[in-house]
Length: 317
Image 1 (cartoon, rainbow, N blue to C red):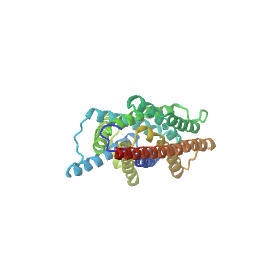
Image 2 (image 1 turned 60 degrees about the horizontal axis):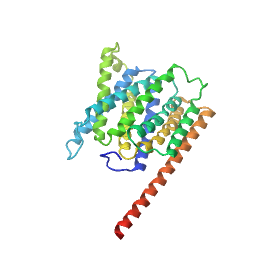
Image 3 (image 1 turned 90 degrees about the vertical axis):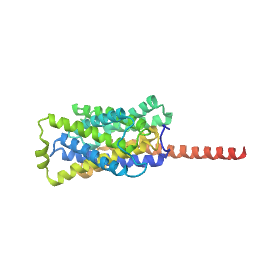
């Protein structure tokens, strides 16, 4: 357990990750739909501006309460690095969604847990058992079945989610390290602030005029811009909180649930459904996730039994 973590609650951490996957799948589908009407840079700017504004208001209210989170960060370099990594991942992903179906795009992103588990073992020194490695690799195999070579998805556009995947893997490892050192709401505010400031600078330097673009946006499209910001803000807040409750290796297999969420939302919005091989790949992913859940329950039971045995021994002594 990282220093500063308030406690280990794997079941609650897994629940937060599942909520996060639903938020991200909905956000990706909304980005793909809205990208046909609104420039992607504006969508990105709105997504991070909403997060910065929402978390800034939260911190203003929290400061009025004893012990509430504030704007002061003990590790500003970590905050800057985290914001840059997430912004890079979002930029690659938002542009990739304009060229790839949501489900297939999400399947490519399922390479992230493999990279994160590897980094967690190397850099965070978290113990990763062989069985957990097999489950994560099994989920990867399922994702590769979905995006199998020859399916027509391996054009130049596939480089965008791959670059986003690498940025996001680094982001998740840094989030796990930072989660026990900073208040999650302070961290979330600075992530949004870094993204919104950088995107504002990019928009000012570009030929895109933000004012007329926003004025020309239809009311329902403006509502979707705000929704994207709300979903991204909520999803990443769930991620920060989850890393405070459970080890990285425990949470990673459940990231695969986002693929199933993406299929459901993608079909509802775009009427796009995977083919037979796609369903087979998702079944492999679901099986690995279920096995991982069973493993978590078994390990939690064994820890509880060990604690009970220690308590009995202490009383006898």
